Image (cartoon, rainbow, N blue to C red; front, side):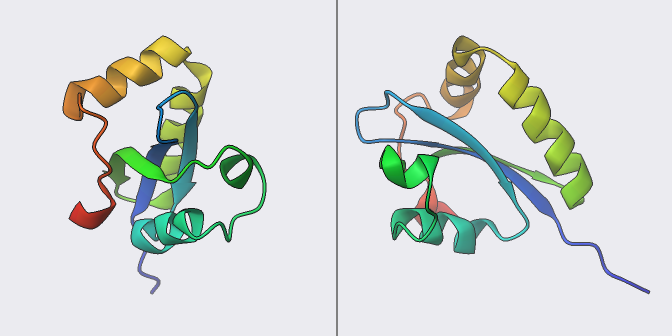
Amino acid sequence: MTVEKHGYVYLLTNKSNTVIYTGVTSDLKKRIWEHKNHLVKGFTSKYNLTNLVYFECSDNIMSAIEREKQIKAGSRQDKINLISSTNPGYKDLYNSI
């Protein structure tokens, strides 16, 4: 019997909130730590995306991946609305996870 891990969809932004990144992981705390310490090469390190401004927990990684695809398919305004619905001040949520 295998125990399925939870999945997380998350949105990161930079200090000026001008760029939004959508990601998915099974270990949110570790993954955001990697982003904050620039261990993830690519888009997030290039644009200095270190502020966790939104996340959702799913029962499993597959449902989190589906949700990530849904969010990515939306417009920038959809992502802004999603963040603003729970975190209108764009506070970095890392220390609350």
